[in-house]
Amino acid sequence: LICNAGMDYVSPGAPTRTADGFDMIFQVNYLSHFALVEHLLPVLQSSKGRVIHVSSIASFIPCMWGNLSDDCVDLDKLHDAARDHIFSGNNSFGAQASNYAVTKYLQVFHSAELAQRAPDIGAYSLHPGIVDTKLLDSLGKEVVKAFCRGRKHCPISPAEGAATSAYLAAAPASELAAANGQYFTLCAPNVSARTAMVAARGEAETLSYQSELFDLSRRWTSSGEPLLAFSV
Image (tube, rainbow, N blue to C red; front, side):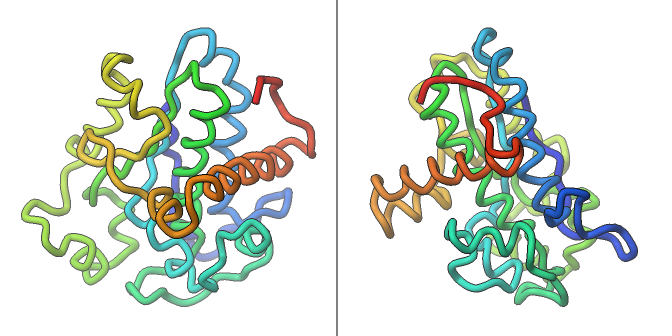
């Protein structure tokens, strides 16, 4: 299951909130994937399937992307980004401020926690690269130039951008077993937003954060009741 639905801004005149009160980008990019994985988990478990979150390098700067406070992804503050905050203007990169990077950050932790709770499936997140798609058009040339700085071949083609997703979907299970829950770039495990949290807060606090985030996401997507029952 490759979770790749995504938007980085809401078009002028389009709804910015969902019917159940969430920021549109937050729901499309993160909550919809979370709910889909929950519903399909029995099938994924019985087939020993994989969940692959297409995250982004923007996951390293979740709060900066939305012009939010530095603690915006703390669990007691996340409600503001998910429901209450009204985004406007551009961020320091010149892109439209939004929840895009927050959602990409959360996908990294969802993959890590899913690997803890359902170890019989594979769960991974990845950065596809700076890919030449319509998503780049909304960022502007200066933003793209900043992200491509130091890279000889950038942006890359859509086919090249799909390489890591395809690898994680098709590689032998034995090849990926030791990297379950990790974040990949260029078809290999790499440092991530989770790595940064471990360095700052330690592994125990990071595990607690991702577990509480998972439970909060369940409440947001299922009226407080888990959609599925599986051992923790």
